[in-house]
Length: 315
Image 1: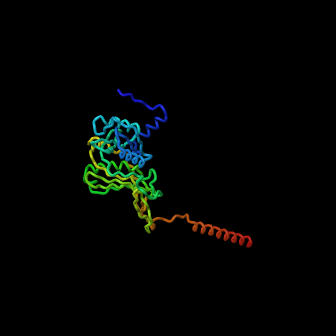
Image 2: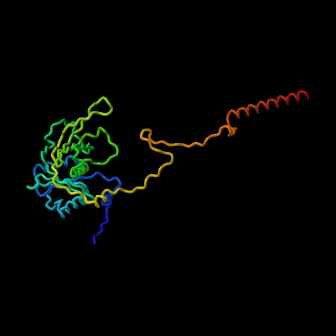
Image 3: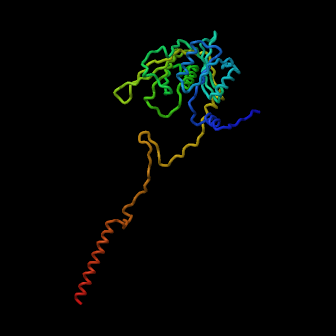
């Protein structure tokens, strides 16, 4: 039987709580690994990925001979690194005569391999090969636009899978609201053919347009490359259903006579019973009535006083 170890320190408890399942998960971290042999081009690609994902990626530069993602038993070391670093996406680079400049992208579920897609790198241009104004360079950790151009991303299964993997790789933290000035980068993916995709990284330049919404210009800042699809592995149906499960939270109790409007916001309805003014007697509590009573009492007292004086005089 496996020994169940419980945390003995507060630091270990905090680490386990951070890794525990949540209703709103943290941003997906990326694990970058080298294979037994990597070319100069592939090493540059892995380094560029690490720079683009800085703050949300962990890179190991040591060679890993035991990692073979598409072979049975070859993903054991990969799953170990995923559990150790709490990463749910990985990029594994290798270079062989049969598959030169090979990059394997994959996703993990519960620290087990969920799906895989293998691409070859062609026509790679590093970030340093682009000249542009450094003032518009994207900031670290900023949210990107991700644009997929081409019908292949909707019709070809391999390209649909690549679209999902690239979206998870580059989107970063999931947020509800965005500041327009904080959007300073865009990833453009163009389907050239059913097996080839052009990927480039651009900076967003905001210019005046005469309206509230600024005009956007894209400046290519690199890197850019062609991704040639080679092999892929989809998740089995049982694993997909388990990964797609969502928490069944109790729905919020509906407040009676209150609804939400997109323009006016929160609105409420008040029901007042029909008022029969003619039948209801007026309350005898008004200030005017009280004043008349006081004046009547004073007048009556004066009359009584004058009457008593006359009686005394006559006597």
